[in-house]
Length: 162
Image 1 (tube, rainbow, N blue to C red):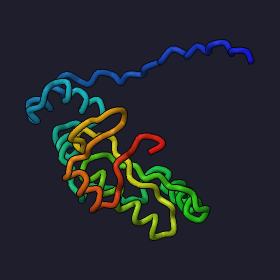
Image 2 (cartoon, one colour):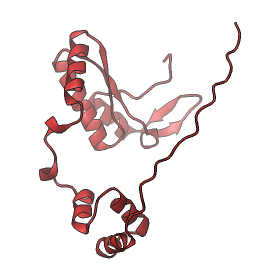
Image 3 (cartoon, one colour):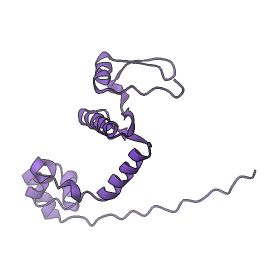
Image 4 (spheres, one colour):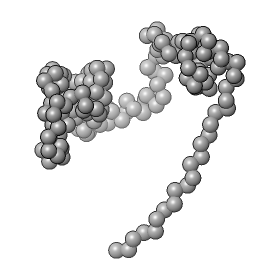
């Protein structure tokens, strides 16, 4: 077996937005009482004048768009239906905070109720869950995290082969 020649990666091309108008940025800084880099970012992403930025920074439920407007929603639904009908495993991934674990649990239960095969929730930040680090991948989970896992029916991630 011969080794293949290394493939050169093309140089990255960054396409940066034009710098926003300085007066617009200054106006955001003055009205929102936020640092200039944040106001520059807000302005460059179209969140100006200040009322627009406030809506972006402090969203309300009545500002949510209807779910039908989510990009490729139909394709996502079709794929989930195919997975449920085919008995495929559906991985539901959530992060470590309350909304992440809650939404992961709700989706897992919903997929299971529909006849799907969801896998347990996976989170990505163990510092909040571990009291003591042992050898290798051994971890002593704290009592609160274990109780939360029991309540929401998820398991702590384990090392491969355990």
